[in-house]
Length: 634
Image 1: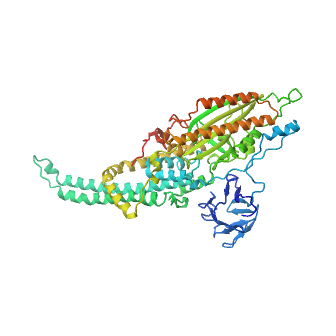
Image 2: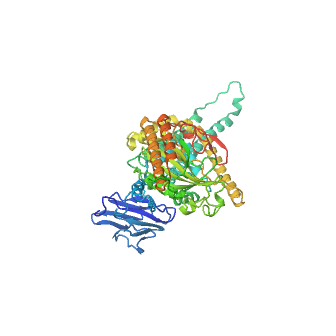
Image 3: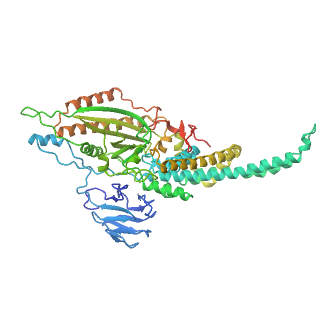
């Protein structure tokens, strides 16, 4: 596109608030806008295929794809199939979602304020005040619904019945709690696939139970018919007719198991969730209206800048803790003047420092890097603030205004604390490094607090979807039939237990929701905090490969060094002597060089009571505990 200085045109969400700031670069010739489009708008009044954007030699053209609620272009409704060309700053509206179009890169570069420039400016005029710091534009971020993490998690629900149950428990059966962030994955798409897998297994188990009952009824009839012969010394009973009568039931059980295997491996894994076939829109819709409403609410409330946590660990969803430190910095002493004496340090707010840190982190330039100031709140206290939770019978908000965030008290005992959050995904989502930096000013001291976490690759068996050999439908059917012969008897005998467990789980989940509702409506204290994310439950025990472990170390070291340099430049820009800070920074660097081993051990996950891959206890719907096997079952 001419005149854009090499930059791609892009869209930025203006409203509603929970989506504001989300950005999509137009990198392809055609982009579909909708709930399941290339530009994915999670709003119920947006159609699945709402509008279309086409990039041509003469600009970007917008077209309404016969959407239910229409497309507004600068307040004017478009006629379907009558495209219009977009200009810089045009306002688009699809349903309730407003987007701003930017077609050129003038004034929109990814530049970051260079704080080191203050040193050069002070050489000419040491007391020259600094101007406001401008955030760099965020780097482009991929659509979570199309990410590899979403695809692998969806495949895991098909491969592991336990994991599908965990997804439903976390998302569907906890309507009042906040959801832990699932970095780089779409929770709604994964949950839809989990529900579909559970429906398919339920249908299989019901058929097998009916066949098992037929066999047991036939055996009971035979025993009753020959009860007298059992009492004789030498009973002579011809079991052949009864065995032949039970044979049809067993023969019907074999295709039942074979069809379940064939649908799972061929129709779902090969034809829907393989890398070259995957489309988020193909995720099956749930049958229950209650579940549909819950998933709609999840889509409308994606992870934002408000994280509500439960118990001790605030960073639910982040994985293993791999690094932490804190640092007090003396900010009372000014820099030395050339003519002697010291300058008076200029005061600054924590918000100003956060602005600089966010801009500097975005300037690292990594793809899919996500940087944001986030507010972490204790789940037991979030209901006390209506700005964070307007109504008690709904989950907390996921996004708040930055002014609300920075108005929170940050003293000792504060249950609402803001951090600069930096997410670095790598290896197609197999590794996600998340870092949190907090700053607090206390009587001439700047206190820095740093924590880093890593989500490691999932359990190896969850990547099996990409290891399936190519087979035709007929070849897959033959293999499914062979596998069904070995699985028939365990599946037939296990069907009553599986159905009983499922009925008990559903009853316990309903009781759990009623108990939560009574606590909330009765005005009792209730923990709205998130506990664990489904990505943490799928997490493996180690880095998997040497190079992934080295990339984890590099991401931590370079990001930490970049932010510490930014803090040092910020202090000098405000006339503060940074000698004390530089000494402490050097100690951190030396410690990193000496102990340069960020290999993650299976110690704990943020959230406390679970270990990766389900190798611990997961809370059941009724509040109890159940052991989870480390390997997929069934």
